[in-house]
Structures are given as C-alpha cells and as structure tokens.
Length: 239
Ligand SMILES: CC(C)(COP(=O)(O)OP(=O)(O)OC[C@H]1O[C@@H](n2cnc3c(N)ncnc32)[C@H](O)[C@@H]1OP(=O)(O)O)[C@@H](O)C(=O)NCCC(=O)NCCS
Image (cartoon, rainbow, N blue to C red):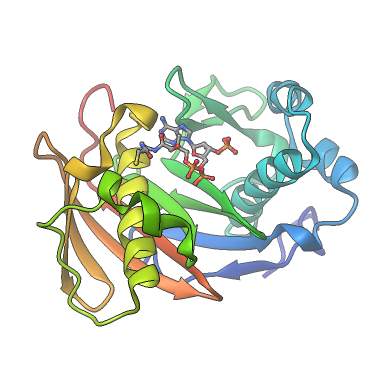
C-alpha cells in the first residue's frame, strides 16, 4: 500500500501476522536501506534528528533509523498520520519509546503505544491499534548465542508445547521475555528468569511477570529469527 503523498515509496516492509487485532507488526531489512541520510531528513523530527546525531557506530545508526522508518511507514500507509514529521518517537526516562503527535496546531499528546527492536539484518516495530493497549516487541536470532546464558533467563516453570531444537526454544523464551520487559518498560531492571512463559496453543503464550502482571503473547519464526509480541489491555498507571 502507498501513503497519500509517496513519502514511503521504495520502503519495503515485511508485514507479520503477529499483531492480529491488537497491533500492526512489520520488519524492515536494514541491509537494503539506501540513502540513509536522505531518509533521516525525510522521516525524523528535529528531536529525533538530535538523538540520531548522538549515535556514532554506522550499524547502530542504521538499525536505529530502520526501526523509526519502519514504524512511521506503517503509520503513513494506514493513514494514521499524513506526514512523517507529524509524530515523533521519544524515549522516556527508562528508555521506553513513546509515540507523540506533533502535528501543527495540536498539543503534543501521546498516540498509540509502540515498541521497537533490531537484530542482525532486521529492524522492526509494533504499534498498538487502540489507545490503552500496551505492547512489547522483540526480535531474536535463532543461534547458539543463548545456549551459555540460558540459566539467566529460562525458568523450570516455562512451558513450550511444540517440539523445536534447543536453540529455537531458547530464542522463543528470550524474545517473549524481552518483549514482556519492553511492554512493562523496566528495561535492564527486570530479571527475565522471574518472567514465566506458558505456551497455551501453537505460537500463543501466557506471560506473567514476578509481580503478577499478565500478558497475552505470540511468537513466529521468520527467516531464522524469532519475533515475539506481548500485549495487554489497560496500561497500569506509571507503565
Ligand atoms: C533495554 C532492552 C529492552 C533492549 O533490548 P535489546 O534486545 O538489547 O535490543 P532490541 O533491539 O531488541 O531493543 C532495543 C529497543 O528497545 C527499546 N527500549 C530500550 N529501553 C526500553 C525500555 N526500558 N522499555 C521498553 N523498550 C525499551 C528501544 O526502543 C530500543 O531501540 P532504540 O534504541 O532504537 O530506540 C534490554 O536490553 C533489556 O533491558 N532487557 C530486559 C532485561 C534483560 O535482558 N536482562 C538481561 C539478563 S538475562
């Protein structure tokens, strides 16, 4: 789909059937992003450009920009904004991204909840469909990387019903728990081992934090990566 003014022409998103009625989820292959500096000036507000200017490493700049282009392209193509500069993704004090309206003549107000992730060649974003819906989104590569760290995040009470190789199981648990930590917004403050994941049907999970906050979650495997989404209605105060 095109946006009304052609802002996103040439941006190739990969929509994922993960958000269902809760939100929209897409990936962008950042290795295929061309003219990144031109794209930055087209897509980023002055506040976002200032954050971008602080990033030095070329791969970090590319993944950071890719996630924002992905999210804004989704919003433009479904006509939720008319111009990339009508909204800005601004971090809160804990690092959680927040999507604000900055359309002319509007007071800055928070729009739908969103969550960003990047891993390897993919950057991705999720944006909630309704105000009040909390989302957390994560991408993790299926690789041996997590084998030596599983004690830090896997719990005996985690349940996955489908039989997968160990590397895939660990990537699923990691991505679900990171998505949960992002929805809560606690960042490094959350002990992932205390988050419990129980698969209730293929690719569908119940995820519960140590203090009893419960999320509906889903995962899919896409091109060697696990992509996970945690969702909850009624964002608690302060989240
Ligand atoms: C901060 C954290 C969420 C980043 O995740 P990551 O896997 O390193 O990287 P990802 O690419 O998936 O996600 C990065 C994005 O998360 C988002 N993010 C950062 N802090 C966040 C927070 N407190 N809440 C929600 N989202 C956050 C940002 O949008 C960031 O992207 P950006 O820098 O382009 O804006 C993660 O490191 C974390 O704190 N996890 C929870 C605790 C944990 O993992 N402990 C390790 C012990 S096993």
